[in-house]
Length: 247
Image (tube, rainbow, N blue to C red):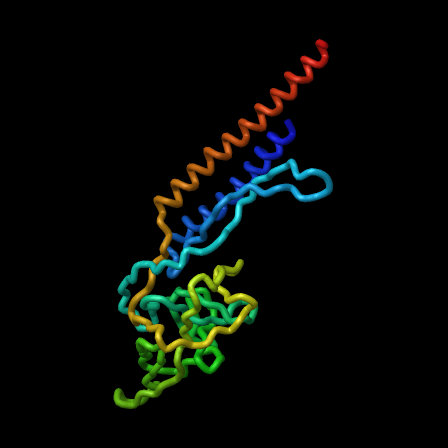
C-alpha cells in the first residue's frame, strides 16, 4: 500500500514542478530571443539500506530548445538579430560571460551598449562595448559598431568596437537560473567570424503557445489522477484495517 501512496505522492509533486516550466515558457511567449525549456519525467529508484523496492517520480529539465525564432523587422538601429546559428556574448549578473539571442539593445547611463534587461554587451576585446556620444550608430552584419561622433559631419565615421558573436557546438550550452545560456564550467568561448547579425530586426520567442497550453492542461489532469490514487490508497488501507478487526 505504501508503494502506491509513495508513487502517487511524488508524482503529484513533480506534476506541480513541471507546471512551473510550462507556465514560464508561456509567460515568455513574447519575450525577444527566449528559448523554450524542455521538461520530462522519469522513474527513479530510492537508494539506501535494504532492497531497492521503492520508486519515485522525478521531473527534470533535460535541455533547452535552441531553434531560431522568427525575425521581425523593427527598423530601429540598435535592434539586432542573430542570423542563423550563434549567440551574442554579454556580461551576466554574476560577472561571468554568458550568451543570449535577445538583441533589443540600448545605451545605459554609463554609455555602455546593453541588452533590454540591462546586461552589458561584450566586445571582441573582452570588455563591454562603450558608445561615445554620437549622432548615428550603425551595427554591421559582423557586429562592427560604427558611429558618427556628435557634431561631426556625415563623412566622419569612427569604428568603436565589434560585438562578440560565438558559435558553440550543438548542445554544449545550458540555460542558467538567470535565463542566459552558459558554457560548461563557465568557459569563455572564442569569437566566431561565421556568425552574422541583421540590424533593424529582432528574433521572436520560439515558444509554441498552443503546445504549452496543451501540456499545462495535460499535467493538470495527471495531478488529479495522482490525487485520486492517494485517496484510493487511503480507502484500501481503511478497508484492510476493518477486515483485520473482523478477524
